[in-house]
Length: 168
Image (cartoon, rainbow, N blue to C red; front, side):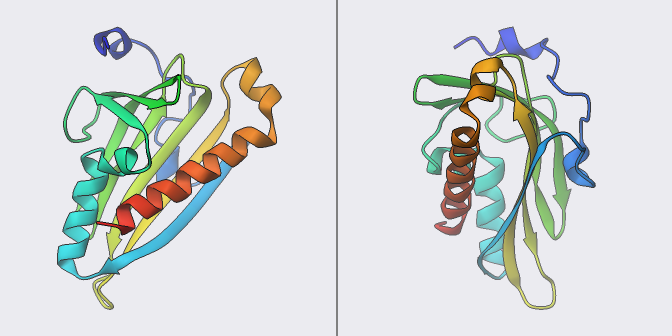
């Protein structure tokens, strides 16, 4: 697969970085979080799983990425059955108690929007939490016509992401 073909493509939505705060109107919103364990070692493993694309692989997606670890500007094409789902990393979170990244959709993605995946370590309790935040809307007429089925697929994939991080 030629990832270079996607490197110069523009993102398909204007609200780049919006998963860091208030999500924009006019999109479907996702806010999911799940405990994935306890302690610094679990935090490190979970963060490595997210940043190294293994969360996506663990959810059953094929991953072809321009970098082995998510970094700003990296391009990834995720495979779901016959679908190719291109995206670009728009930011990385690299803080002592929070790690992860967000990617935005590129032309050819069935949706328009952004999704973030962040692992957090609570310093008081030691609990480790994975948060997935997203905003999206159909990227083409066929996806728009799929309506509720499209949201169901997104919900299933989100649960698979969370399960993949929890299993590390």
